[in-house]
Amino acid sequence: MKQKILGFGQVLWDLTVNVDFSFLEELTIDVGEHRLVSFQEIKELILKLKKNQHCEIIKNSGGSTANVMSNLAKLGSNSSFCGKCGDDDNGKLYMQILQNEGVTPYSIIDKENATGQLLSLITPDKDRTFIVFWGASEYLPAELVDVKLIQSFDLVHIEGYLITNSYEAIWKILENSKKTTFDLAAYSIINKTRPLLQKMMKKYPPYVLFSNIFEGKAFTQKEEPREIIDSMLEYSENAVLTLGEEGVLIKNSKGKEHFQQAVPTSVLDTTGAGDAFCAGFLHEFLKSGNENKATELGVKVASETIKKIGARSFLIEQLSEKY
Image (cartoon, rainbow, N blue to C red; front, side):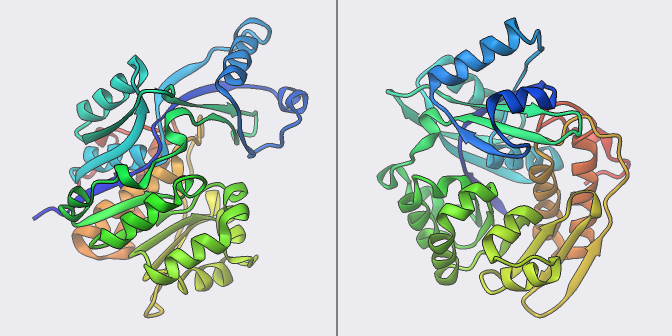
C-alpha cells in the first residue's frame, strides 16, 4: 500500500526572469541571496523589469513543499499539500493547479493578505537570486494546524522556510506526526534560526533531513561534505546532501554511505532542482527503502527539471523507465 504523504509549506507563485549581473548590482544584492520585500516593492520591481529592462517574466506556481508534492504525485505517490494562501484568484488557482497535478490540497485561507510571490532572477551563470513577498504564507498560526489531519498521514514533509515566523506550527506538526522528513531553507534563514532548528530536530529527529551544500554549511558550521553529513546525522536518521553538479551524498545513522554523480545536463533553469530531487528520492525510498535507487531517481528527476523553465516542469514521460 502506498504511504500517504502530507506536505506543509508556503504558497508562492514563482515569477522567473533572466537578468544580467548588472541588474543585481543595481539592487545591491548578491547572486544566490534570498531577500524579503513588501507587496509594493515586488510590484515596483516587476514593473521595472517589464518596462525598463524589457524582460519576459514567466509565472508558475511554486513553493518548495508544493513542488515536492507535485512531483511525488507525477511519480505515482499519494501526496497532499497544506498551506496558507490569500482569499484571491491567485490562491484559488494555485490550489486548483495542485489538484490538477494529482495532489490533494488543504487550503488555509487568509482574508487579510495576498497570496505570496517569489521573483527568481536567473543570471547568465544559471544561478538563482530570490526576491520574495511572502504575503499570506509568511505566518501559519499553530491553532490553524489540524492535528487530526496530520495524524491521518503516514509521513509529513516540512520545509525549513516555515521556521522564520511559524515555528510554533512546526512544533505542533512534529509533536503529532507519525514520521517526518525535513528540507532545510536558504542559508540566510538558517543563519538566523540555527539554534531553534537544531533544538527541534534533537527532540523530533526527521526520518530524512535534506540539505544542499550551502544550507548544510550554515546548519552544521562545517565545511567539508563528509563532515557536514556526519553532523546532519546528529539530528536525523538519514541525511541527504546535494552538491550541485558534483552529485549527491547520502548517509544513514548506521554508517551506510552512498555517493551518486550528477547527470550532465543542458541547464536552462535550476529553480526547483532540489525539490525535484527530494520528490524522486522520497518516492523510491518510501517504497523500497533502497537509498541507491532513491538517489538515482532523485538525480534523474532533478536533471529533467532543470532542462526547462519552472520548478514543476518535470513530466513522468521524460523518464525512460516508469516509476
